[in-house]
Amino acid sequence: MTYFRHKKGVFKHQKGFARRRVAFVMLLVSALLITAIVASTALRASPPTSAAVTPLNVPTLIDSRTQNGPIVIDIKEGEHAFYPGVKSKTSGYNGGYLGPTIKMYKGESTDISFTNHLDEPTNIHGHGLHVVGKIDGGPQNKILPGETWNVTIPVSQQASTNWYHPHLKGSTAKQVHSGLAGFYLIEDGHSLSLGLPNTYGIDDIPLVIQDRNFVDGKMTPYPAGNMPEDLREDTLVVNGTINPYTMVPKSFVRLRLLNGSNARSYEFYLEGEQPFYKIATEGGLLPSPVEITTLKMAPGERNDIVVDMSVIENQKVLARFLPMSYNGFNAALIPFSESQPVLELRADGSLEALASELPTQLNTITPYLEKDVEVERVFELDDMSINGQQMNMKVINHESKLGQLEKWTIDSGRHPFHMHGTSFLILSMNGNPPAPEDQGWKDTIYPNGTAEILLKFDYEAPEQWPYMYHCHILEHEDMGMMGQFTVK
Image 1 (tube, rainbow, N blue to C red):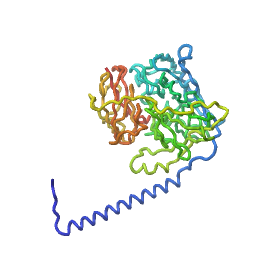
Image 2 (tube, rainbow, N blue to C red):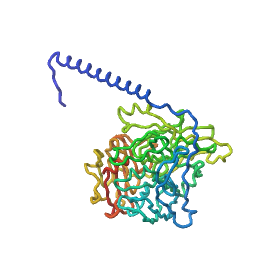
Image 3 (tube, rainbow, N blue to C red):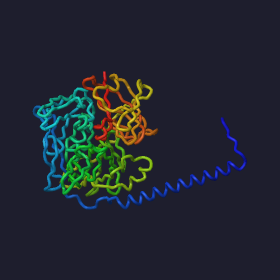
Image 4 (cartoon, rainbow, N blue to C red):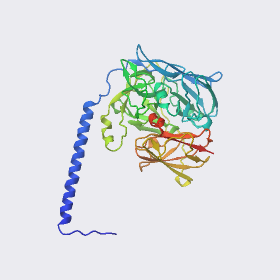
């Protein structure tokens, strides 16, 4: 052990000076914090109190079990009225904005035909699907104007909430912003036996949460020319509707939340800070329901929550707009962030009460063990690059082996991280074990710092059809914050 000696009087003087300096810094930080909070409070919009007036748009459901022949999806430009009587130019799948919800089942295969009626190339990424690289829908899977992509999706993963959207390098952000997004819902025998809310559009409601700007009721088109660093807009849009309501039975109601925004993160909560239950992460059900009062979500993340409507007539779901990075100093400002309405749930006694209780056990998750890790990888996201490299379609950044357990350390700062082809379990978040509500299968993570995850790949992805890993701020992805890897 090393000791330091000080001349008489010197240590005392330095110690007093240090204390005064620390006190001054603390006083300055406190003053800045109070000033920021006061300013934020003055500028923020109070949580909305006016009743919603627009019925929620619920995407059309296409159930693969009742579908006669392949599911046909037309990708095309169209129009959509976000505000009554005012139409905006948009794009959609089989409609003017967004796309149908496609329900699939574990152990079965689903045939889908996607035809591109746009005047530019596009493609379809099955975000969250565990499939081989050839049908994963990365940048290599290009659908030219007038072409049709016929795909058969073999479903082998457990019940989960997933989605589909474009994934072409350089145009993902613009095309998703125009309206190209839809749900893939997977069910299995276990999930259907639990008695969870599962009547589509009644007590099982998919919600695509996005942010958009409007001028005189018209959606502002995606910026032409120079791509913004990350597009964060002012008005919350849910399934293409603004401040919507929906009628629900006086029972438990399941909301499948998808942050489909280009860049914005949210904190969801119920009016009055009432509790609700989180039952699933991206890759499937949690071991058991977890009672929480707030839920933060970054772009690309999905979470299933359940709200108890059995004893109340009306419940509002709200969302705070989070800062770009919400750790450290910014975390103190979260309670003062602007809030906007997501959805007003209105209990209707004439609707049959469906799910009257929640199971105490939802799923059995066998954890990966760190001692079984065979390969460790580090991904540093910074300066529109990952590990100092920008996306090069001709470069394979690494090769993973089938069935090999890997540990990935994600040093992401303000960047949500997503990888294709599998789901992972969180080992740690900023040095801490994951909270109970995060101890499920995931494919997108926003550690606001550093996370350690455990994962393995069970499907092949050759050089021609590699998997991607990338920042899920869509502008960052388009700017090259992405890499690709094979699985053999």
